[in-house]
Length: 96
Image (tube, one colour):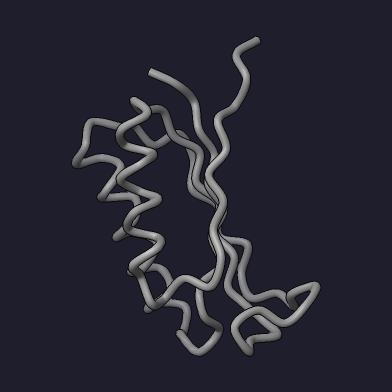
């Protein structure tokens, strides 16, 4: 299993509970496909460096997890079709 880190930005119109439900939905995708969650960090609402899809703010979430490459591909597929996510990035962490 490889180590990954994903950060995604959720639309700012959601309240804290709704944003947490969205984060949990992506965490469940990882877990249901055989991945293990190491850490989930809620960074809260922050101003974006530049306008993205007509939004100036977003709710940031960071998830560290271990999984096979197919799980990361499935997660990326779900990020692409989700209307709740403005931007996302999945990075494979280097092994030391």
